[in-house]
Image (cartoon, rainbow, N blue to C red; front, side):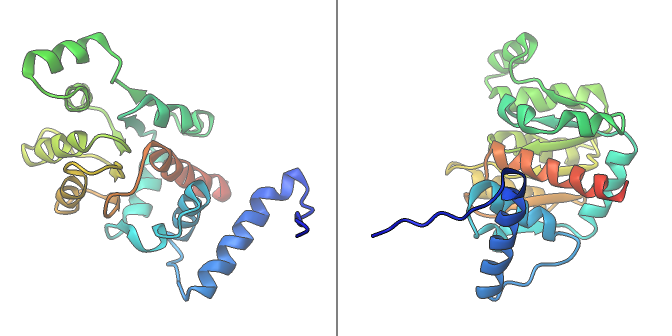
Amino acid sequence: MKIQLENVKPMEIEKRSFEIIGQELKEQGKILQPDTELIVKRCIHTSADFDYADNLAFSPGAVEQALAAIREGADIVTDTQMAKAGINKRSLARYGGQVHCFMSDEDVAAAAKAAGTTRATASMDKAAALGGNFIYAVGNAPTALVRLYELIREGKINPKLIIGVPVGFVNVVASKELIMETEVPWIVARGRKGGSNIAACICNALLYMLNNER
């Protein structure tokens, strides 16, 4: 059997990938909403997983509110160094924002040990104590989402957006459902799927949407 490769120029690979994604979504009868289409397609592009066309959920107005927050200089707090590394920090800096991950901080490790909690929980507490204008992007630790839920209920934080896409099995689904019960803007990958790459992907999709406005 002869293997045939597409002759695609390097600069056109991403464009061709999105053409394939669009065609396959059409063949599956999937119709995406205009305000969330780019985010969904970028998650599919990052993962090659078309389930994101079904499992990505958005609170009403979440994308519009997130874009406004970034324009106003919101910072992004992540629960992994991998997500932090994947977010386009240069694009975010155009609006005055920075990316933070406190998971490796010595004070976070000490606080987690003293309280008998996870570092993810302690890192959310550290972010809350800073009182920042934050978007939270959680791609790994459901305990981070649970703590964010508790902090919201306690009136200690009012996030501009929560991206809740941890991957795994233990409390992953439940933690996402908790976030969906809050009144803050959220983008959640229902079910077990997600990951740090998806958290970063969603952040970048929002930034790309803003850059297209410029």
